[in-house]
Amino acid sequence: MRKKIVAGNWKMNTLVKEGLALASNINDELKNQTLRNEVEVIIAPPFTHLTSVSEVVDNNKISISSQNCATECCGAYTGEISAEMLKNIGCRAVILGHSERRAYYGETSETLIKKTEQVLKNKMTPIFCCGEMLEEREANNHFKIVETQISEALFHLSEEDFANIVIAYEPVWAIGTGVTASKEQAQEMHAHIRTVIKAKYGNTIADNLTILYGGSVKPNNAKEIFSQPDVDGGLIGGASMKAESFIEIIKAI
Ligand code: PGA
Figure 1 (cartoon, helix red, strand yellow):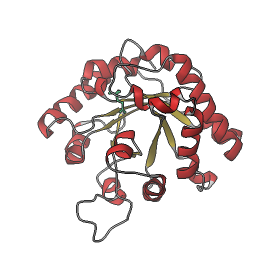
Figure 2: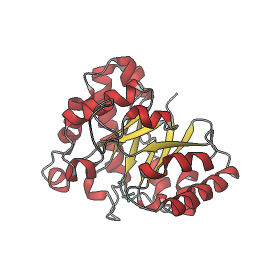
Figure 3: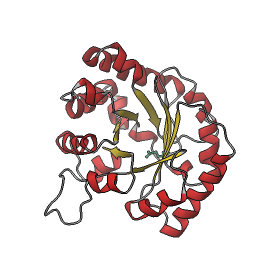
C-alpha cells in the first residue's frame, strides 16, 4: 500500500536545546492524535541534533531523517558524515538532492547516484528531491527537467531498490517563498512523475511510490494539496519549525 508521509525539514535552524524542545512538543502533540496506519511522520533536524532528538521522541511514531549524507562509505573525507553513521544512530531516512544543495553545494545527478547508493545500502529511505526553477516552468520545461532529474539519478536502480525510494517534488519557486503550487500544478506534476515511473518500473512500483509535495505548505493550504490523488504527503520547511503548525499539517493528511 502506498504510504503517506509528512516530513519536516528543519534545514540549518535551531540549536540543540531548541531542537529538543521542538521535537518533544511534536512528540507530545502526536500522542493525542490517532493517525491512520499508513501515515508516517518524519523529522529531519541538523546532524548535531540527531542522536539527542531520537532519544526524546517515540520512535514508533516519529522517524528521524538526516538532510544529507556523504557520497562515500568511509575513509579520508574530512567533514563528511556517512550513511552508515546515520543508520547507526537510528536514522530511517535521508533527504537527498534538495534544491538548496543542488544550488549552493553543486550537487549533480552523479553526486546523487552515489549518495542514493549509500542510503539504500544502509537500508534507509532516500527522500529524493526534484523540482524546476521558475524560468524553467515559464519556458514550459518543467516536466522535462523533473523527469531528467529523476531518470539521471535513479533509473539505474533495480526494481527492488527503486521500491524503497520516496520522491519529493519541490518546485524551487515555491520553497520558502510563501507561493505554493496550486493543487492542479502539484497534481499534474505528481501524475507525470508516476507515469514516468510506470513506464520504467511498471504499474505496481509506480502505484506504490510515495510522492511528496514541498514548497510553502502551511496549515491553511495542506488539506487542499494533500487531497490530490497523486500527492501522498509533504516535505515541510518553515511550517515544520513550530509544533502546532506541523501537527495541523499532519492532521490534514
Ligand atoms: P518551505 O520549505 O516549506 O519552507 O517552503 C520546503 C523545503 O525546502 O523542503
